[in-house]
Structures are given as structure tokens and as C-alpha cells.
Image (cartoon, rainbow, N blue to C red; front, side, top):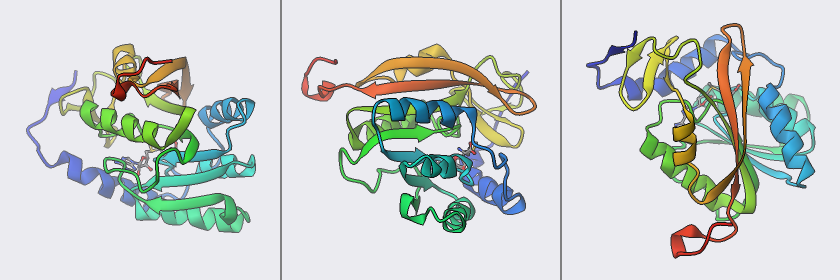
Length: 233
Ligand SMILES: C[S@@+](CC[C@H](N)C(=O)[O-])C[C@H]1O[C@@H](n2cnc3c(N)ncnc32)[C@H](O)[C@@H]1O
């Protein structure tokens, strides 16, 4: 059973923990691309989407795959160690012209103009230490930088995960388990984050030895801006 927490410093420690974990292990999630990026890239390719924003890219296992597949990738992550490693890998693979890396906390507005990207991809970023309100803002910021009909494909660990219900609870579905904070998603969370988008796919899959149980959600930006009274569609 998860225990409630009386610690109010937990959020400040997360970027430090990721930085230290990446410094200790050069390939924390392995070198091979995830099943999620393979799936997302097929969807992007079938729609002719080429300019991709990747959030929370870690040490770049998926970034390299996207660049090798010919996509133009802009990466945001808040660890100096991860962003350094991604730039280094891109240079070693001769992919620097297709990979742009920016050190950035996704809780803040993005350093990009509106409608800059065809698609946004993230793997296990939505299920980090982000409250529902922060996730709403993030999803709206993504929507702003996407072209109309652009895709937002994200993954999140869900309530069917073996770690769900364990660890230390920090409220709002945020639980400290396995050394990091995880926000476990259910369908209601997915639906509540889909404003201004159309949900086009929810795919459940597993990853790693535990295994982690995840869902990959693909949202399409609605053509009409709901915030100015238009009809979604
Ligand atoms: C679970 S790891 C996944 C890494 C990568 N997507 C992969 O699958 O290999 C989560 C990543 O999100 C990053 N991250 C977490 N919270 C963030 C935030 N608020 N802003 C930017 N990056 C964040 C971490 O630094 C880490 O690289």
C-alpha cells in the first residue's frame, strides 16, 4: 500500500535525481529505440509529418532513431547530463543537422513560435512529477506549437502497472516509487487532457523487466481553436 508523505521538498529533488542517474549510467534506458517511438514514427510518416518536438528525451535512444529515420527533431529536457549526451551522440552519428537540443523545464512556456512543429513525441514524460494542472498547461503549450491537425503522441505508465499502489504518495496520483516520482494515468486522466484535440488512438504496451505497463496516447490538434468559441473538429 502507498504511504502518504509529509515531505514538501520532493519536487525540487526530481531534476537532481535524473541528472545524477544519467551521470551514473550512460544508457539508462538502453541504446535501442523504444516500441513507442517506432509506432509513433510510422504514424508520423504515414501523414507526411517531418518536424518533430521531443520532450523528456533522456539520453536520446528515441531521438537518434527519429533522426536516423530522416525526421528533423527538436529536443527539450531539463537535465544538463541528458542534453549533453544527446548532442554528443548526434555528433558521433553525423546527425547534428537533424537534432537540436535545448535544456528546458517543460513546466515553463516553450521557446518556440506557434505552429512550429508537425508533431510532438514524448515517452514517459507525461508520467513524471507533473500535477494535473501542469499537464493541462503542458498539453496546451504543445497544442500551440503544433500545426493544425498536428499530432501529440505521448506515453504514460498506467494504473495497471505493477508499481501502482506502492511507494510514497504525494497526492493527485503522484507516487514516489523506484526512486522517482510517477504519475499513474487512467482513462479519465487521458480524457481530461484532450481538450482542443481529438483522441485518435490509445494503445497499451509493456516495457522493461518489471514490466512497466504503459499507454501510448495519440492526440490530433483540432483544426478550429476551441478557446475562441469554435467547434472542435
Ligand atoms: C523516464 S525518463 C524517459 C527518457 C526517455 N524518454 C526514454 O524513454 O529513454 C523521463 C525524462 O523526462 C525528463 N523530465 C522529467 N521532468 C521534466 C521536466 N519538467 N522538464 C523537462 N524534462 C523533464 C527527465 O530528465 C528524463 O530525461
